[in-house]
Image 1 (cartoon, rainbow, N blue to C red):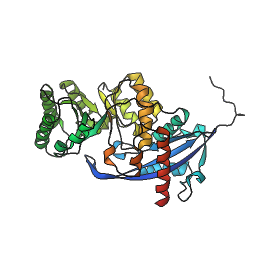
Image 2: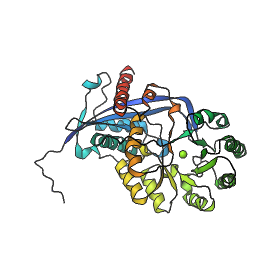
Image 3: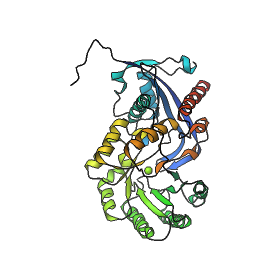
Length: 363
Ligand SMILES: [Mg+2]
């Protein structure tokens, strides 16, 4: 048991943050609509010894996290307003006792991730991630048939393609063509973003089962065929067909992940760590239940990605499935210059912070 000693004051931490906006090179079309701009917040946490850790808040409200505005409002009330016109080194940083630092409600999972990841970065530098292949996100629709060659030539072997966007007949035909066009060693992940109904899901899964026995590229899984509200049907589908089903939207928050596990889900789960709350709690849960995880991106910058790849993936999955982080081709802005986090890690995060400060002062 710990006996708190009131004569020892709580350690005081300092927090500084900067919002960012990034335009997608091409607006991203998904079931949830058209996405043009990624907004987030990068923060720095300093401990009393002057050590610093960087963290990122990258909300995704249509996946159940707080909005960017809510995250920013949280930072503004908890920490001092970001010093727009001051040099980074002269920034007004707010002081906060250690005991309050992680006092963040579950309504703000992206903030929980951002602050605790900064703290964990500060306490232990990331393990240089072992090279794990990334999944390449193909553009939606028939254009995918021409878009896999270039990434294939530079080493991509797993591709992801969004379905449930246009008519089933059309998409099924394109999918067959795509599987025949891809080299036999390629793997395809289909993602419906919850956009199918029972009949179309069965239709897709029948085709996936049939095609998986043929001599061409294989289908690794169908992601979220039905909306999260149809959990019993999702479970039934996973038992009825050979093709694996992965849950994504159903498990986007930590509480949803817990619930699905309690209701009997033992299949693949796609985890977007940046919006799944406190990373330590998430890791503990994944370890305790030996979950079959696909670590996936929410179009975060190198800061959150480096944390997930360097702290979370190696801590839990010795041989992880292909990662869902092959999305760098979607940006061409100042932050993309620092995307290669596997190289030159420390300089890289420093550079990201400096770029943010420059951009923020210009805005
Ligand atoms: Mg998905």
